[in-house]
Length: 317
Length: 161
Image (cartoon, rainbow over all chains, first blue to last red; front, side, top):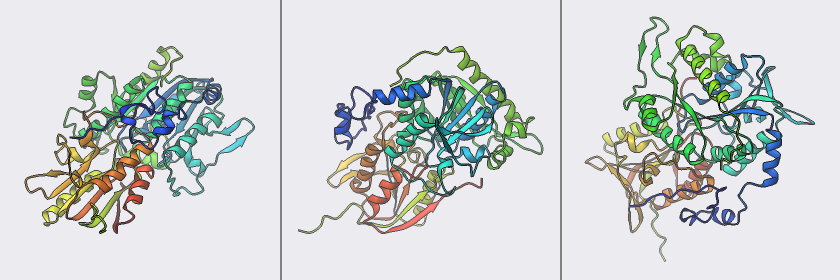
């Protein structure tokens, strides 16, 4: 039987030289070291990101589990403290959801002498997304990997984020160009860790286990896992049903098996989807919802994790 | 010399299942469509080009199957006693089911081209191509590799929000 060997990573010492590289169209480039991190570029990124205190990546592996929803609410939750400066970077180039969720559809990016300006939702909450660069929200961004990587690099290098306490990066589903690139580019600064989002079903968990392996492979610490759509709260009778039954034990069992932290479970609340569609913060719109309570607990745990772990210079790739 | 009969020459209809958005039920629909067509007496193949998150093997309970080679290329995995559904997915090529396929575009493109030209589908009434979310490498490569063949069309899946 056949087996699929893995790409060692274009930035690794094995790039272009591993057994898996045979037959890969990129082999020549990698072997010549041309795809490795450029020291001048790394220095540029380091300078730009120097004033970012904490960086959190929101990942999944599976699509449609609530990464963008969670990223948006994490940003709102952290920015509730007016003393904190929060930045939300959306690197989902094909399906950017953040502008709509933050009520910023139609906004454009402005340039100044110091770079691209993020679009501000609040004075202390700035957002960047490819969504702001499209002439129409229905324009498809049909780009191959290298072009997507280029824009992600620009987002990090050319956006004038200023002093930031928390940089939250929302990602598309998968373990591909965007994910490799963001980890590679952010190795110029420090990533506190990744929050991995899932739903209770095995079809989601099987992709999320892969994402957890991706994090281990690129030495990205895992802050923990969030289980979304974990039960449905009826708006009338307030009873809970399992819409996506955890047939294999849900995130709880997976976290036990893989020795990662379960940050919390968030029930499905129809108000969540509505708030996202309307660009409002669900936490403000439905402060009494059990889902809000779950989100707030999870956000607090993430904040505690970040504040407890001291900044360390670490080469991630 | 006679042109070689391509591996897709025996396929009557090719359907793409697309979305853009993740988690809306593309793989679920692809699976249910294949099962429904099989019940109607059709021979169906499913090509799963979601390389990062292949869901179809588990949905058809063949996640522990392996892929073999024959003279014309790779033999797809047959589902069920009647073998009326055949499936190709990167899921069958992983050493361990939790292995992440951490590939950049060019390597994904190379495998997708292979999936389209090197799988010995034989005679099929329908080939359903399940895709990952987005509009990127997988989608561009799939459509380009299928260009010589007449596509029936695309089904787009969404949710109400």
